[in-house]
Length: 402
Figure 1 (cartoon, rainbow, N blue to C red):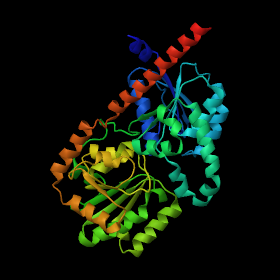
Figure 2: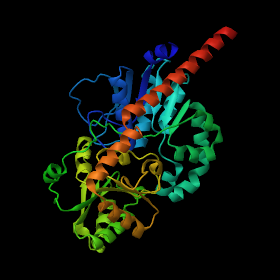
Figure 3: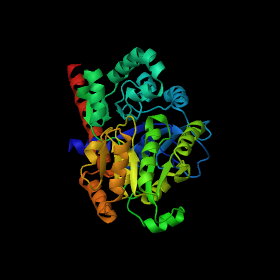
Figure 4: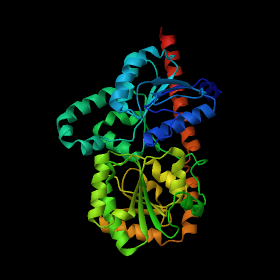
């Protein structure tokens, strides 16, 4: 009875630099949008503090508080400053749960809403910053550690995949009692599902005979795309009809660097850079593929792995994040060490497995492991309920003492 009362009273404020009227990529973006849709679908009062990239043509069934002034994207630094200025005027009730996907986005709420329950879903590790800015990381690491201690003191729940939890618990043992181990990604299976490959390849002008390897994600160094291109060159040497499609946004200079590498390896014509695509196009593009490749230097709980499997596409990946917990048999993919030759062999191996069997096994795995967002939404909701129950007990106890 108490659980039902608590559940009915849930209201949530999500904070992330996203515009709900735009279909964009990025694991944290998709996670936030899927969580937003889940909460709205189940009738919970929800506020999104996002970013506005254009005109909004229709009203939303949730409260949208945009941080305005962005043309097409919003860096986390700019969004953070806007959030810091806007937060005190949100007038959030004390019962509202605040949920973010970056620790720094909680700081304005820690300052202005100290009594509200706070949740963070975390995929990134300090290793991400270390990889992007190695020299700056050496200087900033002591400050980062202290900053993390400060924020972690003020959050109520820390949601993360086991690999991320283990990483942070080794540095901050005190977070263990605040942690809920769960995936930080899941799939809206109404969008990501097997489709007609022949028709979709025709739509995207892809040769029906091509063996198609696909990468979907941010086109940046942390994704280790130089490694993927060199591995694909070895695949191409064995399979002349192989093609590599890279889907995602990146800096023009880095994309040119990758194109130059491909040209030097004599595979420039065999790699297609599709750029950033609308979210509703991603399931179609994935359905064109025979194998999805992931070779990042670090990951938490990569969304694209679930999305590929939901579309019936097997995954070849390095051992990052929680991928090893998902790729469980030879039909749904391979986990490979960071070795170009072995990675290429794994891709070739998967391309030779019966496609129909692979598709059936991939979809079956999504159902068995409950990797759909409806299942993940239920887990997150149970965390909210547990937090509110504990808060109610604490408030009752405090009233009794007074």
